[in-house]
Image (cartoon, rainbow, N blue to C red; front, side):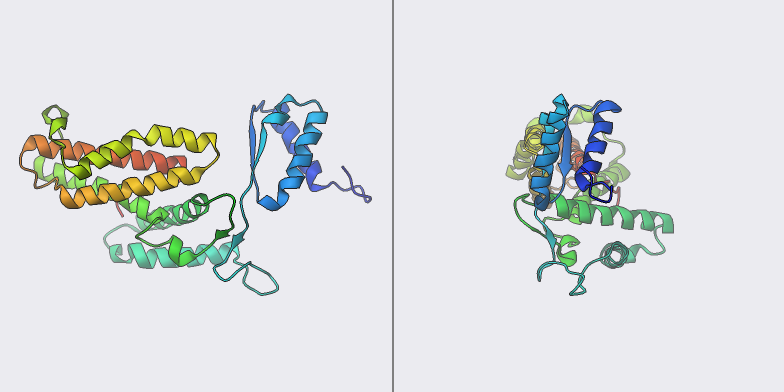
Length: 276
């Protein structure tokens, strides 16, 4: 466990951390999210913990993933194409401000714009990293990950913000929603039925993603639900519904859909925005 000069190995530190987790915090399961190159390392660490007498050793799990690479290949300090954190932060903030928020300058407070930039930046990276097959390398493409359309964190955040915008418009024009006037049997359009059916799958999708350590499954689900919502919104007007019962029913469906998207994003560690 020690090198010839008396200093510890990486495994020495992991064993000390595991001991702290087990003895001080009494955890039952420990998931290590580290790239696939460290697979042998963690096999050795878990076996050592077993030999040390820790029953929790068989509940230690190495969730491996491929290397993070650029579209043109591996990052290398020799090639000078390594992306440093401060560089990534600057590029993200600049692009997100330009693509999403520059038009709100003077309309939103500086604090709201700053918070939006941070939340969209975090969503870009977290969703980009989690929406991956763990067995493959992760190709980091800033332009693709920040796209306002497609399977990206910003797109899903926009889908949620759009549901809030619709509800604000409805309440502004017709007053606060009265769920007692809703009639769910009126939601007969194929796009409405598709959204309802998709929402029913949420809990099963979350459970499966958790059990298999595959957050990508939840990402795919949220993207598909957001696309279904967009189609429904385009074809089933809430503001111009034929009567109050249909308008209320559609508005409540939009609200429920938004809440599912928000809950799913929160599970991925992404904070939503009420407007965007």
